[in-house]
Image (tube, rainbow over all chains, first blue to last red):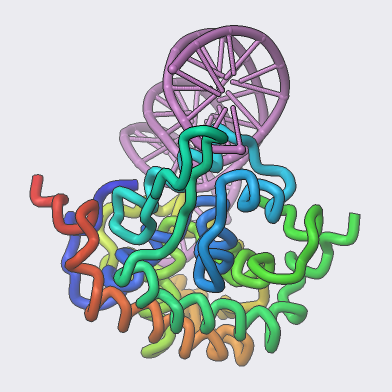
Length: 118
Length: 118
DNA sequence: CTGTATCCCGGAGGATACTG
DNA sequence: CAGTATCCTCCGGGATACAG
């Protein structure tokens, strides 16, 4: 999960670099959400049913270390934290848009994706 | 790896759909390569040092089942197989382009990505 | 409310050897 | 050349409980 330079980085490697950043199971959704506006931790969690605190925290930490997300302590009294995108994180907008767009236009043609009607 | 409908699919879910299709470790490179031209199995493998036959086969099979890649037996005498993109696979071009583009423009700003100088 | 600490598990990915 | 068959490792993801 941490190697990208071990082969000639002429072509597909670039794609790998970007993919690595958003490959985490919940990062796509997190980024999509944060692209819209800042979120508090529990707001985020509420928006993505299924994710546990530990995992969400983990994904956020990773995004933070990648410089895509900022974590800010809003208040201490009632402990509150806000997550939002950095400038760098915001540059992912076109990427996220591409992904979303493709899903809208062609996602339904992918057998594996529409078979999930369980 | 196979669930996308278990939560409200209003926003980030779409992104997830697309991501799922290209999340495999070598799929990004495979798609990037095939976007250029058709490849024989061993040509593909040669282009991506580090991948084993088993894994490459697996990734290709998955892409095939997702309707993105076509496998064609070229010749039997000297056994030869060709892999290429389907029409659907070709629609991923803008997506791949986005990913590549982002890596070119911003990839170097990601700490985790440039730290890989080991 | 927002985390961390443990323990756990499946499966993606890999190494190796064999086959048509 | 292209692919399958085994076996194995590792870690991302999850469940649960606890803590500041």
